[in-house]
Image (cartoon, rainbow, N blue to C red; front, side, top):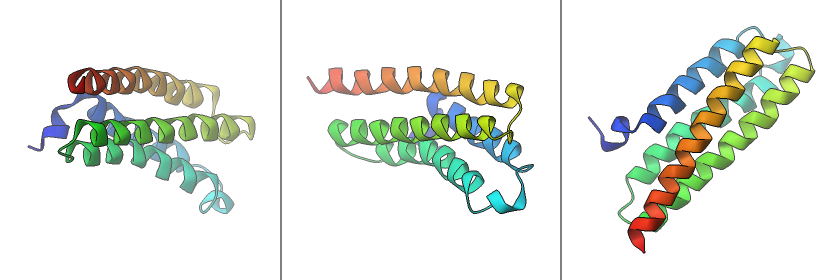
Length: 120
């Protein structure tokens, strides 16, 4: 097992990506290279950046990747709101993604704080 796989924030980020993939399957074909693709890339980027950051030998570098993961999460939240406004997501689907995003953001914030405290 890789060290990042033990992190609950990474596990929840993978679950969020799964949720986004499930919910974007019903998007119309014209969104395949539009909003659907952007949402999927942003969702995948969250766990990917956590994993890549865990490979760094410096806590400063790791913290930077966690920050990038948070940026991808913010992108996803914005894209999810647009998808909801366009009627591509139900209120329930939107709420699930939003709630999961809030939880992951809190965890990313905690991880980043922990990395910054450890280097002080």
